[in-house]
Image (cartoon, rainbow, N blue to C red):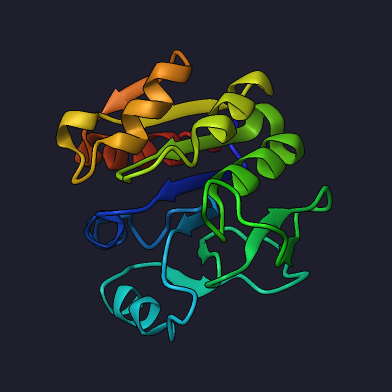
Length: 190
């Protein structure tokens, strides 16, 4: 089966996790990745430039109505919820915070699950709250693949542990093994 998108949620400890992931993923990695990282509402986006400088792929903030394209990593802009529409474009909203967060991992995961169904991979990584738990449940309900970072290997274990308590994940792995699994899945795309 060909997966069409990957959604990743992370919070506390997320910057080092993304840096590791993006420096390892090869430049021919084709499945688009969409990320919610909890960040300060006033972030200037410098961290995206920093990640881009150490990545083989194009990393950018998601734009309103932008079409999701292979080979890109999209990151939710600060202080906006990032939604995926049925036509596989982004929508940005300033609706109420979910789990004290905007952007919310749950909002991204739930809209992605309804759009991509069984062709979606959802990943919950390091974080200090339970955002992502409802979203990963939604991904499983729609037939998607659920991957959770092994809480014992996460910089902050609360978020992956919360997700693990809510669902039977397809994979519970340390970050390096999650990256290797994604590369293997992407190489089977043809």
